[in-house]
Image (cartoon, rainbow, N blue to C red; front, side, top):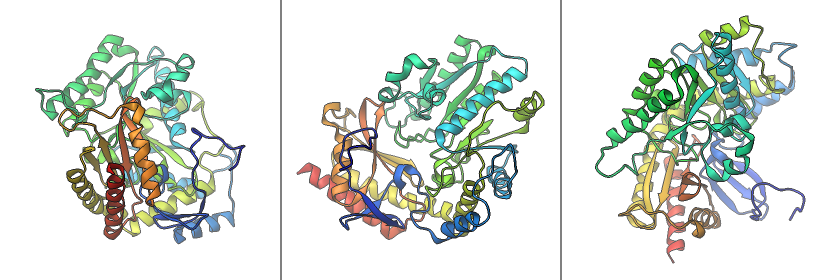
Length: 437
């Protein structure tokens, strides 16, 4: 035990020794399946030779160059590639190092845009509840996840929050479509209450991440959201930190509905766990007024550095060459089916949902009423512990504002095969049987 290192809890964990593909081994030689890509990051698994080769080649030329002193070829190429993949009207990219940083960058970009446009009163951002957008102060102000936000609320502005759409806990007497439209219409009501002239942007994840457990909105939802934002001249920021770079069976989550956002936030899978890198993708319409006014008053030390950019380019190249977006779509559907078979066998499972390789299992004490387990039971944490004992790593969170409603994210690397999906499902089955005993 190391007495000096601390993170979020005092839980004693095994020490990792090595990793390869979708597997990791601890210092005792025990093998684990990484069924959640770490924190839904390791898009290509571990130890991919093409990524190592690209990183070593970049290290042999230049690892770091500061953006105010040099351009560098990998960053230029990466920006061009992201614009190509995003399609539509996207034509500008800003780099940073992580998900919280890129969300923070998006908020500041939007705010400075409105200032430069002569509308400095537009300072209100609207987000959803529950939600998670990052741990820096601006991103945390967009977040609704009580354990993470409550200690720090006196330190940031409280902004309006609207309901996140769910297709599992639909109010009695309503269809999933009507509930989705009602959730979207809360945005219209919130904008009107604040005054459209005061609202800068609305931010949302295309598919829910840690805070809601891979909640997929009804197909009607984002069309209504886009119409409301356009009608009130409010910008739309889509947080693709978890859903982007092939995770959901499309390059980006928004492509499931072809919703046109004003700003995209990318991270996690962009560096695939090999190097921290994130990106904001937007349009010249937003950046030109800012550049003309003297420049974006924001930046990070490692933004767009050559090693990060070369790593991300190699990640994208592997995903394209190995057709991993398609693999996430097809084998993700296969794994979803296996998890639904588990739900048929285990009463503790209330719902299984998601897209591609961003899937989740939500647990309930009573299926009929969808009543969650009492928070004191820490059911999701128990699942995670027992799963680890059986050699599979999953990602636990709570679906109802972070206070209750346990769920497990199952989000293996995009390289995962059908046989490995079978192995994940078998080990989870063993986990649930052990819990039931």
